[in-house]
Length: 505
Image (cartoon, rainbow, N blue to C red):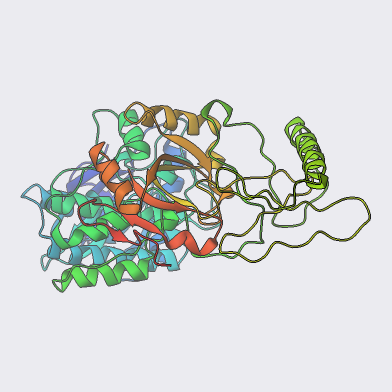
């Protein structure tokens, strides 16, 4: 047990304890050789985890030693002694951001200025292949002039090293952890930007938006709970809206974020045209057959054939494909008989306004006459081996109210839990696979309210009536087979939505 007056490595005299945490204890110390004050961090002495924590402390030192930045704490040296190592660091005069917030929240301009400084430190770390993984007010120190210094890289994940955790140990502060990090996908620097977003929220709102009474409840809130709508953030609100989305690819990158914070610092309100919760940058997939209608909730896991976008090896047909093929063979034969009747011709109008498709005969003979051009394209009967898939809302697509997007990789159990939760307040909610729509980014289950909605504003109004008022809880989206439609999205609030809320063509 260390005490004031102890001397470490025959050189550093401990003066007073500054604080302690999961990694150990930090002391103010006097360097008797260079006659200066320093900060010494000692590993905690828990016998069950000392080996793991020792390695983590040394990792922190290696991480910090690779950085030289005015907003990152400076490491002077490492003292690797028994029973635990010490890290000798720059002693930052002043207080932590956490202690500063005990005196009250910051203004949006003050928070933006501090956010840019912490972001600069993170950008330097990310450029060196280092993720901080524990950005929170207690790890941000404030110099007397107000400049921020990011410290405690003890659980930083260096590229090329494995994550170190003791058995059952949660590494990081739950209320500041990014959702993807909790799910085990922590290899993206965007997770640190989520944490910075929560810090900024706490700075201006004065409360932690996702803190709950227990660790498990807090983790559940980070994964699922809508964030309270900011009430004090003013021009910083678009920054919080942009950062605090659960899809990491929908967050702005560090350069764009710095520009937004600079606008707030200058007294302006930034605009963020978020790509979407499920769609990224426009892509141009290989043409596919039209997508299927939203799956019936009781048949969500029924395999549905698709036209592959890339050449694939042979696949075994499922019973559903065989059954669909048989139905189409029968339908094709029936259409052929109908087309050969003397009192009917190909392309007759039906009562519902659609047109009976022209049928390509499988027997030798002259090709059937092509229908004359019209504003409404005439569909053709597909090959018996390719089941017909009707787009939701017809070939022109339609607006939906997107309520949640769950990565398909999370599994159907996670999807079903989320769907059941949403249906408690919105029984009409259903689900689709984003892979089936070119206007959505592939790889997600999308839980949505089907409407019908005349446009994105109508979808947001519907959500507002149900108490879903944030981009994490509702987004007006357009479903179609056109990849360029992924920009058609409408973001809350319903009273003043942003984004593309209507179609212009």
